[in-house]
Length: 129
Length: 165
Image (cartoon, rainbow over all chains, first blue to last red; front, side, top):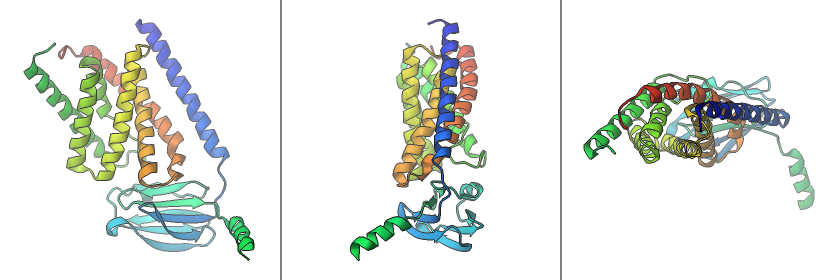
């Protein structure tokens, strides 16, 4: 295939991919809701849960002795300090929407915002009761 | 067909180049505050290998690079991440190159995106969380931009380089 039509296909490809970016971004944004619960998992296992509307400071014990300091303030969760060398998790900023998360790979810590399942729990209670 | 000695030497030089570029990229601290957002400098080497040495060489050089860099500086986690991302992107780049419909720039853009998708998949599996899908739009966009930049640089090198034929 000649060079000109290759460049045309390149441009079509890039524009197509940019359109998909917008679609994915919109899909993520539209499905986003403010969460109610902060869930902390270490190495894939849920370790702690906190309500998002209560201000706390908490030291997370990560994988192989690593630590991260979790702060929940004004309905936002973030990490202030960590034992990992790159501190990516600290730079990841504040999260408050359902499905958002902060991840610290060296300590295998995932801080995630979820919708709390109060309704599900109540239903469960009535069935049991 | 180049003779065997020259072939081995060229493989070594390319793998070493890919490794040093991996290292250089590691020294750019938190280039952007989101993990996975990278320039992908090593992809220049993979791209040049793909165009100048063939499919198998590009795949082989990338595998050597990933194993060597992970042994030197990485952890099992970082190995799993770069292996999934690296293999997925190299395979997609080979397929697009074979289709003969795109230039090196288009091939590189597709490689940039699939590299990031591979890393997200690895992270979702290893960390057992779906939350990371949140980063998909950001990583998708960064894959396009870095792929574009690397593709333009790679295309220039492919055009100018004379040896290895």
